[in-house]
Image 1 (tube, rainbow, N blue to C red):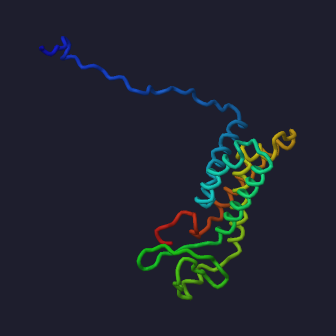
Image 2 (cartoon, helix red, strand yellow):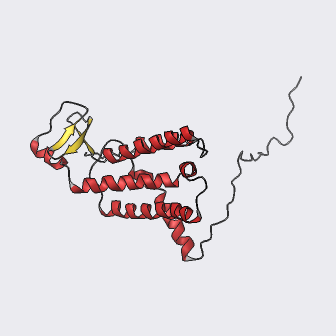
Amino acid sequence: MEPKVDEEAGVKEEKAPLLKAQEFPEVERNNWIHKAIGQTFQTTAHLANHLPTGTALAYQVLSPVLTNGGRCDLASRFMTEMLVSICAFTCFILSFTDSYRDLNGTVCYGFATTNGLWIIDGKAVLPKERSKSYRLQLIDFAHAIMTLLVFGAVVMFDHNVVNCFFPEPLAEVAELLTALPVAVGVFCSMMFAAFPTTRHGIGFPLSAHC
C-alpha cells in the first residue's frame, strides 16, 4: 500500500500555540488614593524578606492547615496560637544570630553577645579583635523588635488567622485589622532601609564576605 502524499506538502502549516496569550486590561489608578494603596501593597508584599526564611516558610505552610482554612474550633485555635507564638519567638531570637566563613569557606553560625560571637555549630573561637565586631549592640534589639512587628503584620494579612481569632469582627475592628498591618509594614520597611542590619544570621541571606 502506497503512502498518501499531501497535495500541499510544500505549504508549511502554522502551528497554533497550546496556550493563547491572554490580554488583561490595564489597571487604572486615577486618584492619589488608588496610587497610594497600590504602592503600599507593593511595599508590604516584600515584608517576608525581613523574616527568617525557614520561619516564614513554616508559618505559610502550617497556617492554612492548623487554622482549618479559617474555620477554627477550640483545638485548632490553640494550635494556631502556638504556631504564631513559636514563629514570633523564633523571629525575635534569630535576629541576634550572625555568621562568618572560616578558612575553608564553611559558614559558621553563632549568637551575638556582649563579649563577641558565641559559636553554636562548632568549637571554633574567633580572635578577640575580630570577635569585637560581632558584639551585641543596641541596634540589634531595634531590629529584633521590628522583625517581630513585621511578623505581626504578616499574620494580620493572613485571612485564615484573622478569621480564626475574629470570625465576626465589628466595623471598627475590621478597619483596624486592615489599616494596622499596612502602617506597620510601611514603617518597618522605612526603618530597615534607613538602618540596615550588618548581620547575616540563621535564616537570613548570606553575603560573600560574611
